[in-house]
Length: 492
Image (spheres, rainbow, N blue to C red):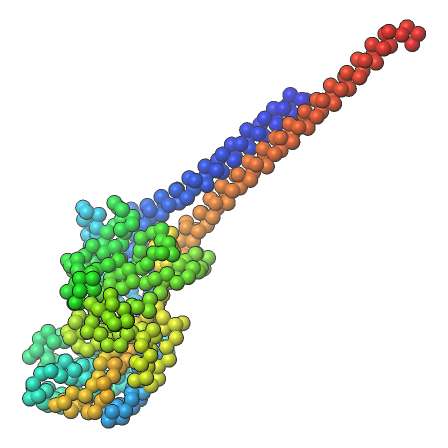
């Protein structure tokens, strides 16, 4: 029995030590295995079914919500009064993105064009595309500012042209016409006699360029040679730098194409990306940690300096000529039209901009933009990009359509592009990147705890056996002494 007990104690001890060693090894090897799997699954490679499909054809629904600033007092604006607007919308469109012309190159880059299509979603909208709204007429008021420095006689001729084609300073049209284009004899005239002045040769609309179009030829790194470079832009339309802006820094094409980022992010990491629509690189900064449907995340937001002018933030001097902080002048990449991008309702902008237009109420929850990133993989979980399109309006002598308009940066529309991982993609993501690492973590500590308990049991068994052997030896020694005494006394 004693021999069996000793063997059991040794068995417990060996098993316990092995469990502790295995658990300890797992604490070091486990994270390496997980990181290795993340690297394998974030490289842009057709052999990675899940991640490649996510990159090629975004498998989650993406929506664009559009809000119009309906002008309530167009006649009064022409007499110099302050514009008054009311927000109309949202008008929601499902956005479908698909990469095409995908070509892999020997230097571990891949080229593609991403095509986008929009489909109206009546059930998600606050109105129909047949709703009628009034906004500034970009063809008239934008052209007036563009022609301001031309000879007076030429401006008179332009004004006469507007009258000939019945074009006034404000447009009252349906949402569908304003979004995707309407027939205009003035547009036909300009395209015929001044080709290249307008962005498109067909119908004129605020988003006419967007539907059934692509964002240009992107060439990005696959991450095959260096995972820290995955998704980063190598060139756009063959360019490694832009020519829209005034400084080399402003013309840099930085970061990714804005859909995914390299893995293993920290709170010090930023989210740089190149936006063809904004004609420049942008960068978001870490705000706070969080969770999306059980998956840990980092939230990144736009810094207040994103659209600051060169005076308030000298690095932005290259994006000037600037106006008040909060406005990005994109005229240089919009056919010199006096168009400005901002956050909706002039959120994070110079407060004086709010004083020039009635009906704006900025707040972060409704008008701030953010991207929620899973830091281990660089995959966005929840995205909301919100931007506003504005037009500089002012009185231009010789162009009577401008009346006595006070100089103002006038909001026209703002839009939100949003989407989040859901359904089977979220389930797979949650299982592979949250559940399995958690199970592995519990396993390593479980083995260590089990091993320590087993070692303790082995020690206790060993001590009990030792105590039992000691008692047995004492008992045997007492019996022998008694027998010797009996033998030494015959009378007994």
